[in-house]
Image (cartoon, rainbow, N blue to C red; front, side, top):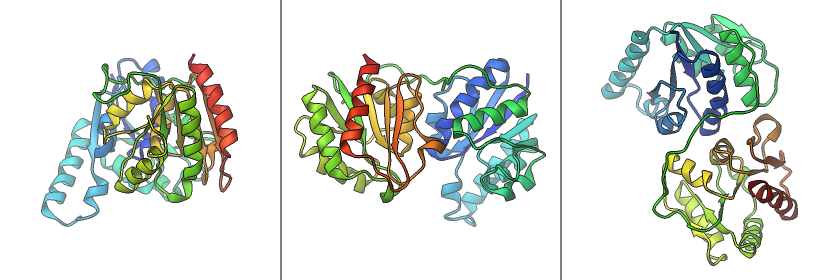
Length: 320
């Protein structure tokens, strides 16, 4: 039974985009012992895939704030020792950065990744024992092709994220039909104008659908509340975990979101998804769902309310 280490540590969207590669890997190696290194904030997310035997937390984001602190150095040493004790046959770095390549090298396993001309950071390839040319297709397909090339198979079949939200309902989850509106993202340049969200929320309410506005930071909460106060009957969600997010999104009639990890999570749990791209390229990492997904806009090309509304209508029809 091969023991395989996957290295895709962050961010949320990147981790979600690696799920189909895990599904493929399990289909070809059903008895494999699959471990996955992810940032500690995303452990619960990675555990949603039943094909992952063990999630290995790493805390690079926290460690680099105090790299010389005794407690941090002890954690780093324990992490390295745990990786080496696992005795992996192969490590696959689908992140393609120096930091992920270093983690893979620390494992002591044969390390595989992208070639110099296809890696996100060409210097990362200096750490690899095996390198593969993967064409510049959507990141999901790049991950699938890299993992298949390393393990000796060609990915087959359609898209399958392979994850299942935990059963049950959230205490505050609406009982009627609702649509999740993901207004927040990491960079302000990616935001869609608030008047557009208000117009879209008004249209959703007219269709008998309750808009739900999640948030992560204080600034995002304030933005959600500004929009929601103009939309009687809408909900500003309380703070929740990524595991709870999967449950909320799976039960929604649709999800509409800017370029953010939760938008990709909606697609992963088979919710019809409309991606709004304002300052990033949807061809590289647009929404992809098995039910319905469409990404609108592009770099400095925000879609209009009218365009988004028309596609949301199609998404709602796909849900049935």
